[in-house]
Length: 287
Picture (cartoon, rainbow, N blue to C red):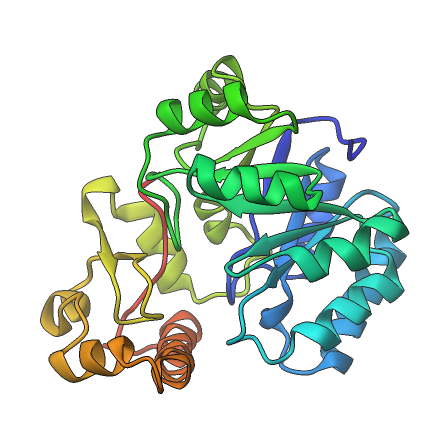
């Protein structure tokens, strides 16, 4: 579908993925994707797309957040359509509008799902493939094991299934393919790559910590997210306080509370990723 040599997507990682990483991924015979939200302005986003297009004619993708908290979605979608990116990975919210815009242009749409219910919904909307986010994924992980999730989706869906989570070497990739995946999405190992823009401390944390050091926190976005259990995380805890929980449960202000929580969390991640600080909140998966 993407005309790549190896069935691997370098996963879109908030703050981490960039044009240099995607270009090197394409040179290596895989593909890569970047979250559109990694760029503060449309001008910066367009500059990155232009850089990638000038360096390679291979397939690459963009990750779009589909829920209402992403106030830049329409602008990002229009830019992706204009540049005819090869594929879009949708996360959170309904991908209906994204699919409707991209399909006529020949842009493939792959949708993150965590269970069969969501998978059937996006298949009916016209998704080209499903990204099965299992409980070993980094970032906003699913709740179902790789084998159980792949078995469920490949038996009940007609479109290709890409496995996300639990792959850091060839043997693990082969296992996912044997379980029915057509390819895999890999993120965390690439955090420590030369082209990754994050700090040396963050890269070394990915090298030196292990799966047992990964915990789920709701403090970053309101949705459970995987982080390295540094001393700072142990100090601050992984659960929202009573006020945050109350505000998130209030129907009238829940949307704005989630947006504020997400903004604060992403700023905390950004500070930790690019500077020397004791407030080390580093996102990574157990792999």
